[in-house]
Amino acid sequence: MRIYIVRHADPDYANDSITPAGHLEARALAERLHAEGINRIFCSPLGRARQTMQYTADRLNRAAEVHDWMQELSDMRIELPPWGNLAAWDIPAEVVHAGGAEQAYAGLDFSHKIQAINEDSDALLARLGYVRKDGRYHVVQPNEDRVAMFCHNGLGLTWLAHLLRMPLVSVWTSFWLAPTSVTTILFDQRSPEWAVPRCLAVGDTSHLHKAGLPILPRGIITNYV
Image (cartoon, rainbow, N blue to C red):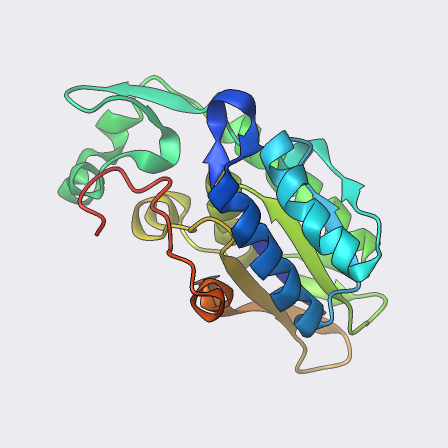
């Protein structure tokens, strides 16, 4: 099995939709996912993810399954002078790498939220035939499905850390998922019983290059050129 973690297209956050540029991105993405042979679609309930997903659903003539846990972590925010009010995954790496993670996140406890996301993702993967145990997945029903998961930057990074057993704050401060980027995870099976997620690509935007579209910097705070 492969899962494709897809960030929504260029957002109009005020209206929870996608911009005209985002519609072009979503069309290009649909062609790419069609070529990948996607046969299952899951989606966040938020408008910007659903509008992005619909192009792929129409192209594949497949319905999507919507899951509330896949929505963006909009309530996980931090007031951090002098940068202001930031999403938890936007804390400057210079603060964290200088040993300031505890100070940056002081007084905030996201553990219950993160645990719920991890449990919900594991429940979905169990439905698909892979039951998590100690960071690996017991193969109950092996398959060759290719599954597109339409979600968001913060949620996608948080999920990636769980799948790959990587420190969450390190993933938050070291990776960024561009609009309509595709992160591909193979459930690498070396034995009949067990599979372990292996990342084949993070934040791939080759479909945008193919379509002659720019990579728009939504979620990069400064100095993106």
